[in-house]
Structures are given as C-alpha cells and as structure tokens.
Length: 235
Length: 235
Image 1: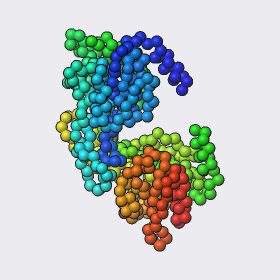
Image 2: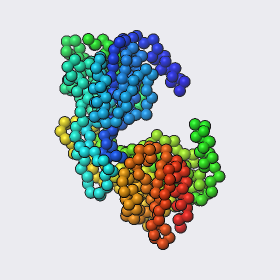
Image 3: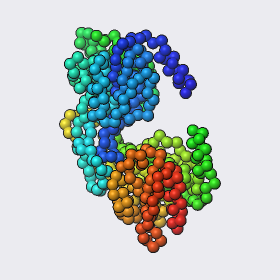
Image 4: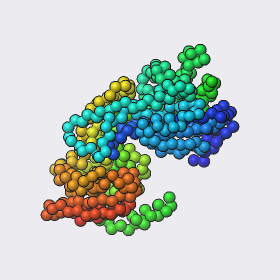
C-alpha cells in the first residue's frame, strides 16, 4: 500500500497543468437497473478507468465532478463525487453538474436497457418461462454532446469484436470529439483489471478521423495519455 | 480490525461442539446470470449471512464446504470454499460436495431465472424495446431436499411482505426441515447489512410447524442460534 501510494505520488506529482482552470464531469462504473427491490440488471464495469481519469484530470489541474455508479473504489483526493445507481439518476446528476463544464467524459458502462416496469414488491417465482420487457435507457453521452454549446465530449467503447469500426461509428453517431476503444474479449484487459490497452480515435481540426494506439499500460497512465491528446484539441 | 478479531475469537471460542463430526454444505451470496459477456442479472445479496453460517458451523465443530457466488468476503478460517458464478455452476458444485453431507444450508440468493440464451458477443443496442426471455433456474434447495437420504435441509426466505406465510409455504413445498425468514423491506436489515432479524420455522418430531422469533442481532449470532435449534432436530 505504501508502494502504491508512492507510485501514485510520483505519477501525479509535477504534472504539467494542461487542464488548469478546466471543469470536468466524468461518469464511472456500471449502473444498476432495478427489476424489483432485490433483483437488478448490471454489467461487469469496476469503475477503475473512470476513477483513474478523475485522478489524472485533478493532477493536471482540472476541477473534477465524478458521477459514479455502484463501485467499491475510493474517491481520488480533490475530486467531488456524486453516487448514483441507475442510468436515469446518472443523467440527472450529470445535467445538474454540466453548467460551466469544459470536458465531459462518459466512461460509465451505462446499462443500455432497463426493465420497462420495476416491481415494487419482490416478484414471485412462477416456474414458467418469464419475459422481461426492457426499454432503452437515455444515452447520457449523446444527450450531453447534442446540447448547444456542448463541452468537449470523450466517450468509451468496450467491444468484443470489430472494436475500431464500432467505436468510430459511435464517435460519428453521437457527435463526440474523441473516443477510446478497447477490446474486452481479452480477460487480462478491460473490465475490473488494472491495466488496459486502447485505440484513441478523434476528429481533427479538418474534421478528419485520426487514431492512435495506446499500448498496454495502467489505467492511470492511459488516463494521462487521453488528456494529453484532448488538451491539444480543446478550443 | 483488532477489536473485530477479538470479538470473533470471544464469540467463537469455547462453543459447545454440537456439530462435531457433522459435514455441512452451505451456499452463500448472489448468483450472476450472464446476458452476454458484459451484462448480467443479479441481486443484492452480499453473502454475509452465508459466510457467518460457515464461520459459526466451524466453531461448533463441523466440517464446512462453502459454495459461494460472487462476493468480496474473506473465507472464514477452516472453511473449504468453492467459488461459482451462475446458479447452474452452484448446483454442480453442491452436488459434487453432497456425498456424506449431514446438513445442507441453502443461504445463497440464487437467481430464480437466467436469460434463455446468453449471447457470446456483446449485444448491440438497437433503440427499440427489447424482450429478454428468461428461463427458470434449477432450484438447488428443492433438488437437494428431494434426494433419497437427503441431508437436514435449512432454507432462507427473504421477502418484502407476508414474510412468515411465504416462508412456511416454501418450507412445505420444498420439503425443508427448517427455514429462516426475514423481511428485506427494512433497509437496516437483510441484504448487505451486518445485522438481521428472523423468524425461524421448522417441522417438529410430530410433523407440526413450529416457529420462533430471532430478534435483531449480528448475522454471526443469528447463525449460532439457527444451528443451536437445528442440532436439537438432527436425527
């Protein structure tokens, strides 16, 4: 733990203050969508990448609001954290935090769908096959990016195949400024791991799609690399 | 942590060895049912009650195999732990552990349903309402209790209303020897809390239903109370 703390100090100390004066809103972790008071839909996001982004941005001089789904992680020093459970709660917290925001980072693995009706009492098992009606959740990243005077929007895409092609489609469809794509089919990387490897894709000043590989590194190192690129692209 | 450790030593030291020579299989925690490689269905069980039961049974002299769904808990000293994810895996691990078992405690919050088909690649969001077909999971407790020469079977019922009536129905339908019922609608008790309060219901030697209240106490204290009653009823 002392070693970890030292590594963090050395990693974050004396960083160039490339995000000085910037306000960031970062989402992290999974969302949980209630089926009834005990059951839920969720996903395997640990929140580690989002928390690393919050830590890196703070070290780079930004003021960070971290809107986090259920995780077991400790809030990085200097970060304002808002805990939420569902996608609907996350959108509400993000919208409340947006005024004055320069960079929005949608790193949470927001559940795409939620049960159409959450039961207020525990469902009884009936034995027969059950059909769960799911309704699409709000797309938080697309909602933020579609606003007038939208902040610089960074998205994440975790895919099991055709990673770069899906991510580029997401960048264009959601009108993002940048997207970080990673392959979660490799169990050593991605969800709930400390390391990751990514392809960073962005739109340059000429509106051309550019991409660069961020090879395997700690999530904190990747977070610094993402913001180093984003800082060059900020208006 | 020292204080906690001391409390545990004092609680478990010099317990009457009422389960000496007994073999127990205890299930704990939630199960996770994969929808695709990243999404799953689960529930809010922390596993704390099942782990407390494993610790108590060991202190009372039993040999314990703990079959646990995904939790963040530490294995109690002296307990053989087998980690599983889904209900199907839990049933398989339980059946492998059953030969020679004297008492089976089904404390896991096994998901009643699983997606009828788990996708091998991450589902793409389509925008429209989605229907998730769910199929009933095997009932681990009922499967164990229905076997010839079944062990003494203890179940748990977490309900939001009509707690005792549902639990008694479950005791009879699944042919259990004992069931511990608790009301999870109280957020201070039940899932992910350290304390609980229960109604213990069992069938006496005359096949009559009996019940007793176990007032609010730590999950470890409740575990001792459950085994104190069970030991009197063992053949």
